[in-house]
Amino acid sequence: MEILWAPWRMRYVAGERPAGCVFCAYLAEGDDPKNLILHRGESAFVILNAHPYSPGHVMVVVNRHVAGLEELTEAEGRDLLRLAQRSLAALRAALRPDGFNVGANLGRVAGAGIEGHFHVHVVPRWEGDTNFMPVIGSVKVLPEALESTFARLSAHFSP
Image (cartoon, rainbow, N blue to C red):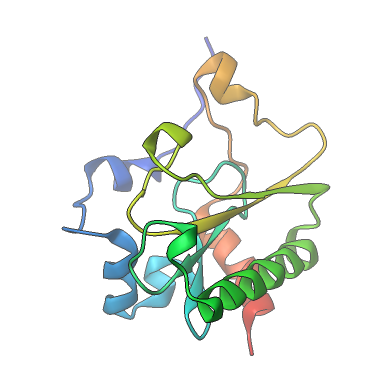
């Protein structure tokens, strides 16, 4: 058996979890680099996923704590879509992926890890990436630390 080391995961495993909604807590805290918030829009923000499916996996999150897509106002929906488009452009420029998965997991049975606060995933994909590993080997392979990915993407979200 091969061992793949991911020492950065220990921060998550052993770290304290904020009470309540993590997205709301990060917005209120205001330390965007620490919380991996790449950009704040009018009614939504872009955050790097701390437990990514692949490098550059971001989430576009509405500021208001609502669970469902149908609960968004028109303005929130527009801002969410605009930031998803901006995320695609930033990821193309910074990481040059071969494709993307874009979508939302609504409800725990649909795969939502944070089901009470609506967000959309933007996941860059590459030909021959290792996305199959969690299924057949219970292993996730990420070739870059979150801090490095954050630094590479930040410049593409500057005003």
